[in-house]
Image 1 (cartoon, rainbow, N blue to C red):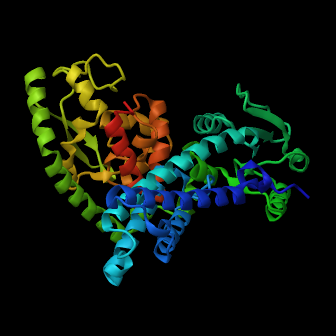
Image 2 (image 1 turned 135 degrees about the horizontal axis):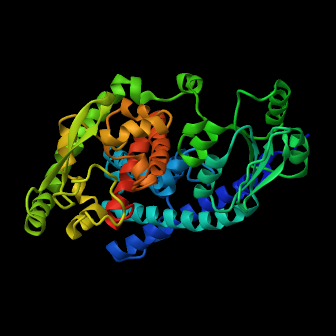
Image 3 (image 1 turned 90 degrees about the vertical axis):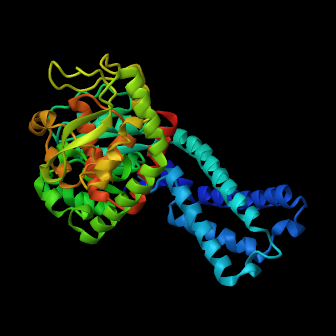
Length: 467
């Protein structure tokens, strides 16, 4: 019988990790409440606030941290990131405590702490818990240097190896090829050919793996399928390539998909959920109105700066392809010289000489995108979705990239999963990477994923990353 793959570093210390995180969360809760009580009330709290009220708040914290998978570093929600998940958990904790105060009344807080201490303590607890998790995760990731995945290969794996290596810096891949098939050169110190499909049992008996990745379900012999079934029953995790991509790489492997999978795979609720689409539209309108009012002073100043430094026009209108292939004009602050495309349409490069000095700053902090709030308000775009592409590029991209047209089944967005995960791209290879993220978003759309994109977009704006 094969060794249970779950006994690797990924899970061997999971119980210990949970205990450490719970203990540190509780210590942080007590310390933060007492520090804020001392700072605001200017007195040392009696009994160090160790009352049933603090235990109840700790219970809410542990519950929401658990629901957000913050007690494991191998999470199905890992694509949301610790920052987003911890923020959502603390927001839910604060909301629940606030409701408790509202329902129970002052007796919930009275004799314990004031509302100011409560708010400050929960905010500091969020920062504490986030810092603890980042430190432990850095240690945990370095322990993964011995973690190995066993890959059953039946087709060229160049794209998988490239995608895997871009996401993980320590884990290793062991490849098992079809008997008699030529082996593909990997040029990767973390990847090795370990044999062929007949060596599956031997490999699992000899070494411990985090799981087995099956790259093709259509052409595998029946006897190998039977063996994989027995291995899975024995405790080894088996992943289809598409499932592995979704859970660990937060994208879809477009070169390994087929129409049968696309027709039957779960998800894609964003396409055929009228209630969800209507709710998303309401959110877009609110964001466009509120965001437009907040950003209005910035846009006025930006318009003046563009006019003074680059002249007119201030805005740049460009035809893009939107939902269901419909064309519309996207509106942006002009960041290039007026005759930037006198030689025809082409991608904007990172150090493009056509970009003005002011335009480079506007692009870095995404200020040039603010006028697109009007496109959102009119319904041509959503706040979150695949970035709209130019028709001149789409014709070629549809020929080169499979399923490229699927990104047009939803409204394009100002920001999106591809933008926060991959950043700016100026080539067909970048278009491939971004399409994998776009299809992941369309397939796995949820309010939590939208919140994650918004939080990551704010980081991009504040720190000017991605371009």
